[in-house]
Length: 263
Image 1 (tube, rainbow, N blue to C red):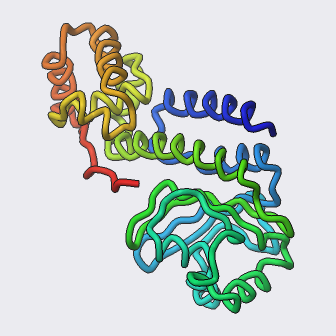
Image 2: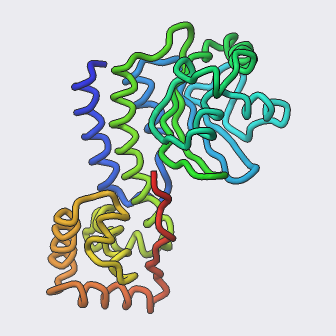
């Protein structure tokens, strides 16, 4: 897909996702879209929390389905050039296997991982982490055979990465709310974006802090607040937060998680 066309398409996709009151990251949808955009063999959604790590492939290859990384593959996992790259540099920008220097990933490690992945045509990989901190990560990994990804692919991946970070930030806020509260706000006419803004406002965050947490401009956050006031039939932030408090009194909890790690 042409880069400019792909960027426009992904802006539309992201805008649609941000309007939904999503309480989990829609990685399946994103994987399908990434496959179509980059025309790759498979797209993996990879995650790790401490010593537990897993993946979901679309489509499955070589009999590998969704699940935890098997113990017998843990050694290869830690020798993977991209894992070594992100661990050594802490650089969250998209990266490909072919661009990892031998000073970080020795040839023997690259060869061992390529031997494991070549039979399923997945030895060339491009990773887009949207969460990257010690012991925790979330990333989409594009895989194909033979040819490394182009510079244009990396540029596009960098743009998409920022969109994924925005969706992730909103999902974290809405995911901290009860399902009942999300549904109540939806019935009140609030979009997913507006529900997240209200949840943070109910926690006492300033407009600037709300904007920072959700990856938007302060002016955009103010516009969302104005829409919230109109939809709830209130005149300002205090009244809107009182509505949130009323919902909480009915057993509907509006709360936000700790700040997202910087990427």
